[in-house]
Length: 254
Picture 1 (tube, rainbow, N blue to C red):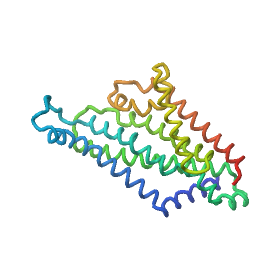
Picture 2: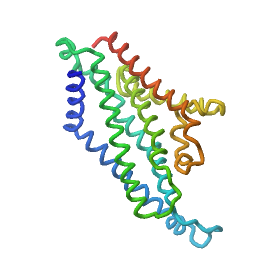
Picture 3: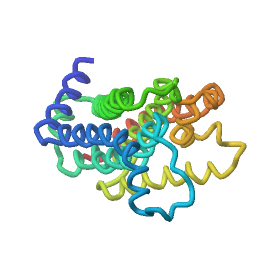
Picture 4: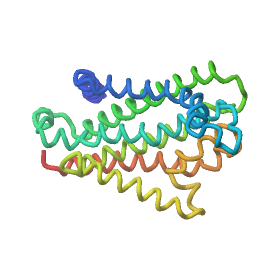
């Protein structure tokens, strides 16, 4: 446990020294600020673009628009940025040979995998909830409606999917020789989830649905319990990916 703590600490310190942690936090902070602002400005932008030619009246923005923008930005930009930044988290260590001295001094390879998984999960959690709480505060300030009663319940599935994604990144980075191969493998995994989502009978079991039903969870029009299989499968796959990462790294030449 002591080795896991020190190696995890080393990951955070290295991320801070290279400004990676600072940059990604600033990025998610900006996302959090922009979500309600985009919701407020969108009707004005549409009106300016179309002028008097718009045949329908644009409804007033609500908290749903702000949260809709939050989930859209998190899935279309937030998760992609996380993937791009950490696709070489293990392959980079192996290619640089930085693990050789540590392993020869007695550090278990499983400790490396567990520490990196802790670092990635905490990084994802910190960034996502930073954007979430900033969006929440600004949404409460700008919108006084009651259209979004379940804000915490709605964000839970996204957080779980993010954990699945970062463990998949760790696995693909352990398998691959460089960050580009890791990106391709991670992208292939996500594409596979989208293909599975074509089949309606499998949707409640598919982890990708945890990123697409959040507005329904937010309003209470869709029961979170119906997607419990997808959440349990996501958690199980995350544990499996960690186990496979340990097995592969144990057999890999450093």
